Image (cartoon, rainbow, N blue to C red; front, side, top):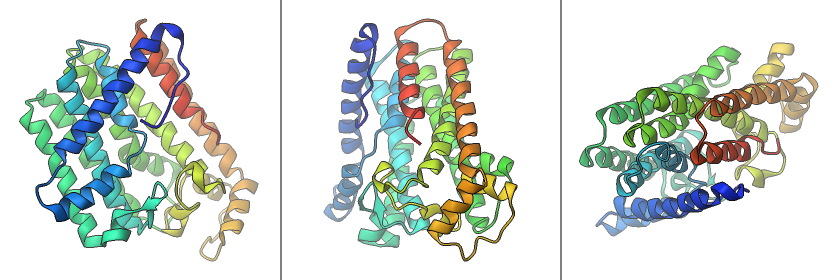
Length: 319
């Protein structure tokens, strides 16, 4: 786990417990994705060594704290969610022709696109296999299946609209499926699998949605930051691949121009001068505030406090 929260003393024990649980999830992921074929295992190990912050499995573990926590079961569920996320990233890098993933060679750049397709499919199959083998709540299996569908639908829509300016409304629909869906389902499934009632699980899922929307918009904003290390990839890679993100769309709403021949510097100036960054920051703040309002409406407990601190850490990044 590569993020650390400054938490109040009364929730410090729960936070450290969740950190330790996340380490166990990582161990399970390594075990659950292992292949007996060395050719496959060497690629899978590269995927595992390129892990991110493991935000989504953390949310699964955390939401389970609102109910009856069964460690082994929830660890496996959190692992399935993270393996699913890994699969989407491997496939994303193929479409984007990304050379790096978190400052390390991507699977598609190191092994080729064909091997990356198979690797992503392998991980997706492993994730689905865990859900089927462990007899999880059927509603959770459906929710995760729907999240996969939403991710794929959003990626298809985004790809088919390369070099086109989507409306703000349609772009938000894309990131709702591409990013927010998995944040939402992470909080939902952990709660439901821990015997929380449907109302609370849906409430937590909605918080995950607001967090995911804000997170993606902030990510779009960070793409305009020249400090590449903040996001672990080349700046404006989305634009290079023909994807007009929310700051660009807000700027184009203010002033319609043809961006075809714009350099990076030209684009950054255009977005700044036409309120693209300002408007995107305002929208990120809107979703962030919605998340906090929903969190504050939850019944008092330590899990609620950790969720608020987590959201504050994630959504009040420097952008």
